[in-house]
Image 1: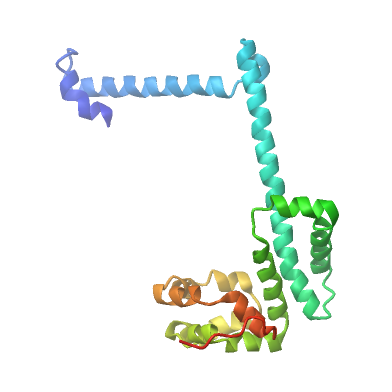
Image 2: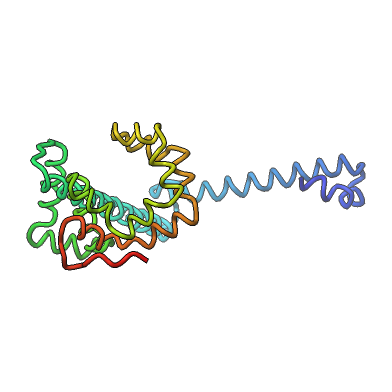
Amino acid sequence: GVGRAVGPLASHVLPLPASAAGAVVGFVAGLAAYLVIRTISAILFTKTSHQRSLLVRLFYGSGGAVLGLIFGVAFVCGGVTLVRGVGAFAEGGTASTDATDGLAQTVVKLKRSLEAGSTGELVRSLDPIPEEKYRLLEKSGRVIASPEALGRFLEFPDVQTVARDSRFVALSSDPEINDLARERKVRELIVNPKVIAALNDPGLIDKLKKIQLEAALDFALDQPARPAPSAP
């Protein structure tokens, strides 16, 4: 600590042994740190009405209002982004099937109401997430909801390259992973150590990055606007 480091030096000033002088210095340093922290806390966490100076009260009041506004806007933007993202995925899934899931339908209706009219234009202009990301989520929902589309997705050349990777093959043949996938236990599947280890593998990550996701989704949904590229 500080006392041990400066003890020998302090013993030349204080009429005490080095160890005792170091203890005194350490105590004084700790007390000084405590007083500094307490003073700063008293200034920062005192109520605005308890401040004596009008200028300080004005600073505290306006600062609190600005911080509240920033946190409020961030909270609202985060909520809107979440609703639009989940809603886009659910919208794609419900559009591909006759599912009548109450929660999914509620989220889709909420998303559509947010994006309707002039309010929707304002939401889209303030949303930091690009529109193409929501388009990808909507297409992903459609592919996952359709066994036929999911099968075509797995036939896409870039996806086939990943599917032939030895690490992916090992996961595909693992009974535990297959059981989790079959039972649709997404959370358990994501946090499974085997899955985490595979997704942290540099070689597999490189192959995943090379997947042209929108082209693969369009291929799966039989949208020839973006033809499947030839396998490398």
